[in-house]
Amino acid sequence: MQRIFEDRNRQFWILHTLGWMGFAVVGYLGSLFQEMREAYLFVVALDAYAGWLLSIPLRYLFQRIWSWSPWQMILSIMLVAFIVACVWTVIKNFNYWEIYRHGYRPDEWIQYFKQTSVGFYVILSWSGLYFGIRYYQTLQQEKQKSLTASNKAHEAQLKMLRYQLNPHFLFNTLNAISTLVLINEADTANKMLSRLSDFLRYSLYKDPIKKVPLQQEIYAANLYLEIEKVRFTERLTIELDVATNTELALVPSLILQPLVENAIKYAVATQTAGGTISIKARKFGHDLLIEVADNGPGMPIDDGLPKDSGGVGLVNTRERLAALYDKDFSLVLTHNQPQGVKVNIRIPFEVELNDEELA
Image (cartoon, rainbow, N blue to C red):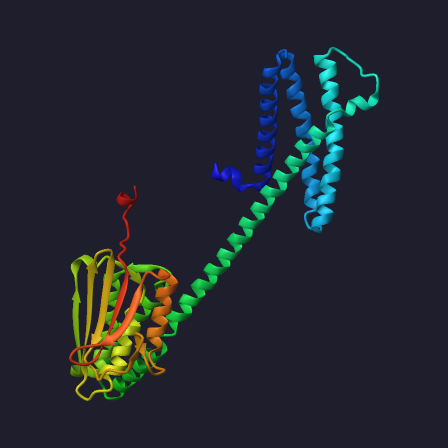
């Protein structure tokens, strides 16, 4: 049924025909209260058929005046509806007198136009329905275009926000690989390059619009941290505490990477002794709770975000979450105990349904 009505031309003919069939049914049912003979059914059918034929040219005329000013359109519709109503009334009276009254002829020709006002209201109603349906279709098309444009802009924004996060990390990693080559640490450089390749492959092939299971994000975060561990060696400690029932929970792709990158930048790289980065995930009711914490020197926090101009990754992450979940999320930056910073994310707990569950 939906496919049938997707074609506007087919939609017109269906509605046009059903409308005039409805007119014939109503006309015949009304005659039952007036004790009309069965021959009146044939008269009503001819009247409806005549109306069906006469109103077809109105469609093409109205298409031509569609772009006219409102007053020009109204006057044109009224005039055309009156002319068509006059012709239709003459045909209806002729059918009634010839078939039902067995060849009756009125004394005055003006009698052929008797009840023109009724025909005028019917044709005017047809015209009103035509314009109403067409305005609705145009409005829906514009709405669809607006939604499509909004979605395209939305996708572009998400992609831009995600790809803003990687250059700093890539620059540092390539520098580290270059240093390892210079000091003849070929095996370590090769391992680091291999992990970088895997991480970039994951980063490039995961659509930022789509969500992925948390276990894939943990895998990507591990790739990133293993690369950084080559740079910082024993100065970087990693702790993972991910509940088993959260591994299949859907999260935005690479949502952990900017949080881990910030922890590396502000907690590990700034301390001679290095630091610890922990990632936790829990299910709480209908929500998924993710925490990324460090034991670094900390930073001033204002309204859940860094006070200074840093923390671009956090701002971008919040914007991505807002674009994907509207207001049904939270991202809060707080002080860790005894020291450091932790980022808490709350998003709806979602899992990907398999074919059996969908069925």
